[in-house]
Amino acid sequence: MRAGFITMSWGWRAMQVRIRLSREGLKRDVKRMADEALTDYRDEIIEDMNVLVPVSGGASLNGGGGSLRRSAFTGSDKRARDGALTVRWNTPYAHYQHQGLVMRGTPGNRTYGPERLSYTSATARARWTDQAERLYGKRWEKDIQKLMGRR
Image (cartoon, rainbow, N blue to C red; front, side):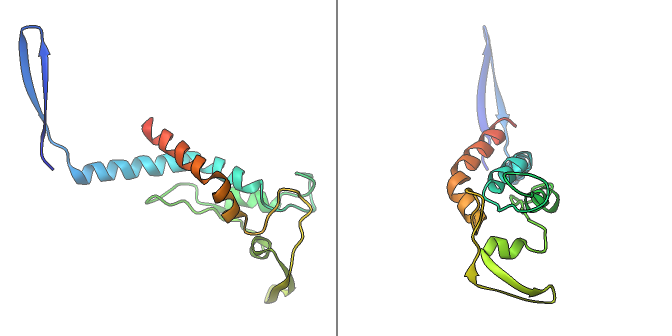
């Protein structure tokens, strides 16, 4: 990368300053800022997705239990790395709920579908991650870019 020149003057005196920018250093700084911004925004993403996650049984939360929703906060990556943050719903039934398929069998011998689940929550959806990205993806992108700009 070529050096850039900045001319500064104070009244009667001017001086020229040469600035050298390292392309690798800039890439590293941008990646670090992106990881920090994504990490800071993690809980917002989980909360947005969890609106679409089905709930049932247990303590009251949106008309039912919330262990599947809570599992995203404990099962997901705590920090972004290399521009990626994995959100995980960590319960034995998370996969079949996400796929929207009725589960049968035991933990060692399960089958799914072809019957579809019907959800009691008005906001719950199968494949909630895809739906959340369609609904909130642009906002997430803008908000994360704003967070990066503040660094």
